[in-house]
Amino acid sequence: MKMSRFEEVMTRCGVLFGTSGARGLVADMSDALCYTYATVFLQSVAGAADKVLVGHDLRPSSPRIAAACAAAIQDSGRELVYAGALPTPALAFYAAQLGAPAMVVTGSHIPFDRNGIKFYRAEGEISKADEQAMLNALVSLPDAVTPVALPLADPLASEAYLRRYLDFFEPGALAGLRVAVYEHSSVGRDVLRRILEGLGAQVLALGRTDTFVPIDTEAVRPQDVAQARQWAREHTFDALLSTDGDADRPLIGDENGEWLRASKMVDALATAPRLAHQDLGAQVLQAWLDNAAPVFYLSPLSVSVPRPGSAAAPARGGVPVLFPQFADQGVLPKHGLVRTAHWRLLQDTAAQGVHQLRYELDVAPQDDANWPHAARLSLLVKSKLDKLVLVLRVSNTGDQSFNWTGGLHPYFAVQDVLTSSAAGLAGLGVQDRYDTDLRSQPPGDLCWTEQPFERLYEACPPVTLETGGYSLRLSASGFDQWMIWNPGEAGARALADLPAGDWRRFVCVEPVCVTRPVLLAPGETFEGRLWIQVCRH
Image 1 (tube, one colour):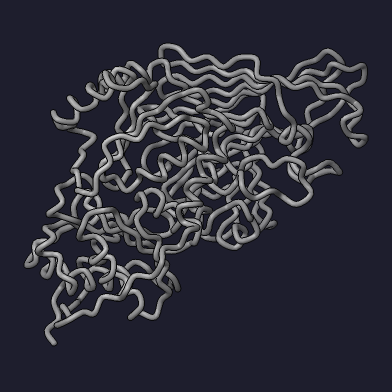
Image 2 (cartoon, helix red, strand yellow; image 1 turned 120 degrees about the vertical axis):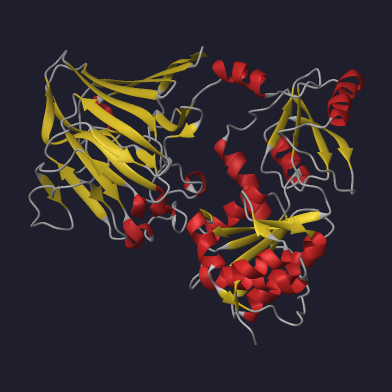
């Protein structure tokens, strides 16, 4: 049997890697070629994974291609998890929850006579390096392939995607709104309706068809422009929503049926919130800076996994506030008393690209017998363009002095912690939980491995964090130490609210006061600031 580099096979067959996965004419995507694509992915990228997820869009050719991929999975001795017809983001999300690689059969918005296959690791879509590994693989096309009969779809996949939105947003977030959904042949049409109705909206379904419609959200067809305006004349709604074929790109229209193009979206974003937050713990959940770069990691499982013994569970990610005890260094609950308290929201304004929040909380002596003091905390958060500042103030409102430790605990999003680094720490004195003989930070940039990492630095100089897509410049005042933490592969297994593999998607660089507790006399106020700036490469 003649073996060839897979790149040569792809070139002969005309099914090539594009901007996202492999694409080609349906006529060229034979069962044998799709089986070979799947086999190469399993051998070159999927590693030792014991289960692999497969799903697809609503193109007529997609189930056949999915069946060929499923045959390769079963022939490799792995378990097939068939999720059925679902949005590409839903399939990727469920694969991350399972800690499994995935193959998604979709051509996105291209015409129905074409199709494609997207490939995912458990951590997300494959990289260009993964594609190159597949291209270099030695393969031979089988003479014949017997596609498997696809089983019933796993219902947990769609339910997980639905719960992701219903648990994130407040109940009734869309109550009182009438939202029209241009369903066409989008694979997301049913789950989108369930999400909107679950958030309280009244949904008006329009334009459903079983004939594939190649909706391109970047270049809306004239007939779809005219149709949207006609619907606005015939119906009353507050917004019009649609997606492309695999529902990974939204298309949004206003109450007049006008699709919002880039210029209109820019105007809308100028007054749109750039911060997601919750009053529980005054926790900033996400910040979008510098053209919507997400600054923080937020676990999708945080809201659905209560922590044992807790009346309320802070989210795993974002920026928790720690007070009056850092970690478990005392008799109070881990990281103190305020993460599980509901703060008062005093300000939430967004205008001209600036989003500003202000939360406040009063701590009373009777709140916890182990810390019988009175304090007022405030958290000010301000985002603008590529900058974000968080200001934590602690005031002693009682008649006795008190000490406290704590600070801010940001989870910074990175593409892969194993390829990220931090500069500006060399030579600083350290306390390392896992290497007690280490006394100072070695020369060069700080890098991470798969091992747990927890290191407290004696000072708080400016730090540059390389995330993989951009740099974050971090500086602080008031706080006098950095704590840097990542649970590593082993530590992540003990965190029920962290999906498998997600330990690689963040690193915590925390401005804190730990070694030298803050002493506040009656009437005194502490102020600590954290500045974050996004710097594109």
